[in-house]
Image 1: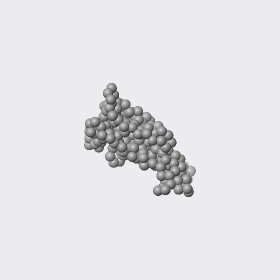
Image 2: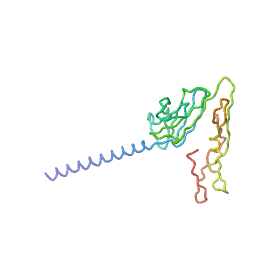
Image 3: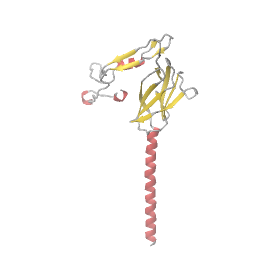
Image 4: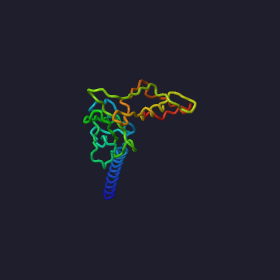
Amino acid sequence: MSDLWIHSKFNRRLFLALLFSLLASKTKAISKQVNNTRCDWCWIGAVTDRSITIKAKLNNRVKEGTNYIQVFYHTNEDLSLANQAIKKASANFLRDRVATFELTDLVEDTIYYYVIIADGRRYPSQGTLQFKTIKVHQPYSFAIACSSCAGGTISKYVSYGVSNSKVFDLIGKYRYKTARGQDSPLAMFVHMGDLHYRNDFPFLGLRENYLDDY
């Protein structure tokens, strides 16, 4: 009887130890995933005089209602936490590792600076991104860019439908002077087709490393 009691007690302790170990491992895995969330890239669109939509691609799946994915934005380029005037907004939608922000409190014909904050990680890590709202009910100057096909170069001598063309970097960095003397980005970029190619054949020297960028 004594041996049976000891054996039973040992089994219960072993079971509880294994159960707590599994729960702790699962919690640790979830915590690790949450703590490692970052923004890999973002796009903007649907720009009006008062609003804009921002799409941020995340490296982890996050559940609807999670509020640690935010965008910081302001007309001042200083978006550090020391600047108490910056505006913060949580994602309106979270789906398939993409966070959607809809900013609706903007001023027309104004340049805004913004960064994405994902679990305390800032994107971009250095500097800021920017957009400009449009002007309404009166004429004004603006610039747009158009491009088709994402083909770039694989090496110095070979060009074959990859998605790392330097022209996109040049388009993204383009600035022009407004009538107020401000450096303004493009009002719109129109991509006319072939956003990226799936050419990943290392044995032929075709290595596609830019799919997530586009």
